[in-house]
Each structure stands twice: as C-alpha cells, then as structure tokens.
Length: 149
Image (cartoon, rainbow, N blue to C red; front, top):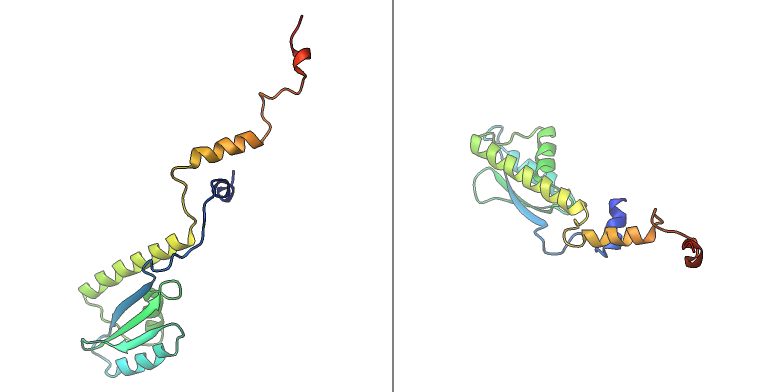
C-alpha cells in the first residue's frame, strides 16, 4: 500500500506549513576584514532579492538578514555571496555556528516538505484496506450448498 493511501484512509490532514512554526529566521552574516567596503556592496546586492530584509548589524562587519525558511536559507545566501566574490568570516566560531544553522534549516525544510507520519492510527488503516480487498477466506458458495448432508 502506498503511503499516501494509508494517510488518506487514516484521515490525516497534510496542510503545510503551519503558521507561526518558526518559519521566519533572522541571521547574522559576518564578513572578513579584507577587502574593505564589502558590507555596503553586499547590502545593495542582497536588497535586490524579493522576500529578504537586510540591515546593517550592530557588530562591525555584519549584516542581519531576515527571511522565510521556505524561500531562502543561510547556506544559499552565503554561497551566493561567496560566488559574487565576497569574503566571509572563517574563524572557528563562525564555521561552527554556520554548520549548525545549515543543518537546522535543512532539517526544518525537509520536515515541512514531508507528510505527517502515522503514529496512533496505523492499525486502523490496514484493517480498512483488508476489508476492502478480496482475500482467501471468502467463499461465494451459498451456505446451503457448503454443508454436506
């Protein structure tokens, strides 16, 4: 039985995403000290993207980006900046934070795209399917002809 059929028989609702489920992310992008004036150029470049809110961060050489995880991810944004020639901070701390954020956002996007899992009603689904399909214990012979007298 296909998974979609089982979910449909169990009466599951698959309307994703749930509003207010932490879809809006606010992240900080840190740039290297050299070359200078990267922040201004990156700010102008990122502001052209629809659905992305960009501002200068409180710390030096940082930009704060705000986006929906359904549209963007920090990995996509930073990769685009690297491809455009910008130099990001490569300290150990920045690499660790970056790896954690990449993993969390990828996992959240994957979970939003996958359907709900059956947990408590899985046995009811298989009972319904069993009742709907012909199987070996069904005999079409009338009852009076089955008994030998």
